[in-house]
Image 1 (cartoon, helix red, strand yellow):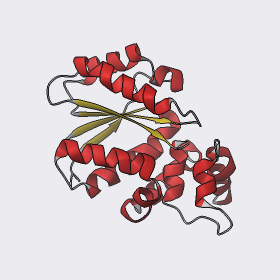
Image 2: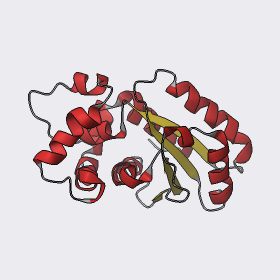
Image 3: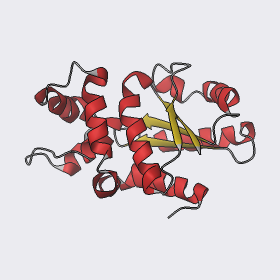
Length: 195
């Protein structure tokens, strides 16, 4: 299966999304899936990632090579984000050839939280507080990347931490993120007829 991840901005998100999606597909007994992160065109933020015309153009450009399009964005505390994603999924159905699917998911509250779910966190940190925090990237992710001296690497720590977290997908990430990761995993599982 060929999977194209559509992030709101690949420049940092690619280092987290690709290893986590690969781990998810491996968990779903699809370890040979080819997972690619969209780099062309560059979506420069949430407005472009939620733009119907932009998503339609991406689908039209890549539909011959991709079986599953995954639009992955941050929730950013926006309670209406799920509805917007549902609207995009519905609107794009007419642009997808038979057998091709677009699924959209929003991370509570940012993609970095999926990585945090797979890491050993300081004991003083509450997982409920991390999930509820509107800006967990600044409050939780960056301090860990800084503590580990990873800010100078690609993605400011996201590369190393994303790979580390993905190794604990089944034991940690999917358990700690039922509203988003497990929901996406379940939807993908239904599509591929796995688990």
